[in-house]
Length: 103
Image (tube, rainbow, N blue to C red; front, side, top):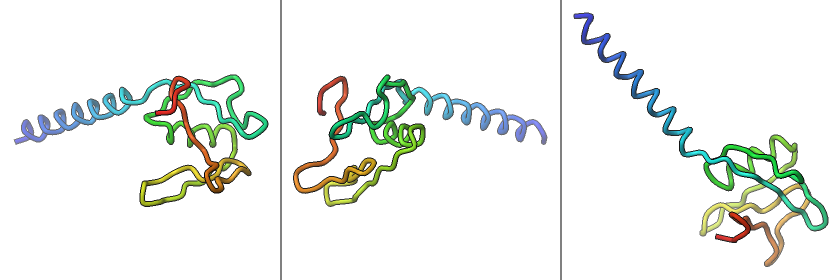
């Protein structure tokens, strides 16, 4: 009777380990820099962080650099509407680049 429950516990442990390893494999080491109008807000030395996407990289950078950012939800999805004291206005806003290119 104990053998099936032990087998299930071992199987669960293996599945949990696989899930943890897989989630870590999705994250990429990225270098991030946040530029304001006249100065670098974060990452002048472009520190490397582990992130799954650009928004997660921004979130981690904001924690490390102690700066605020805000998201706004629209019919097109969430977008970054403010970083630090710089808010998006009209056609001016925040964009991101991957390897120097806007996706």
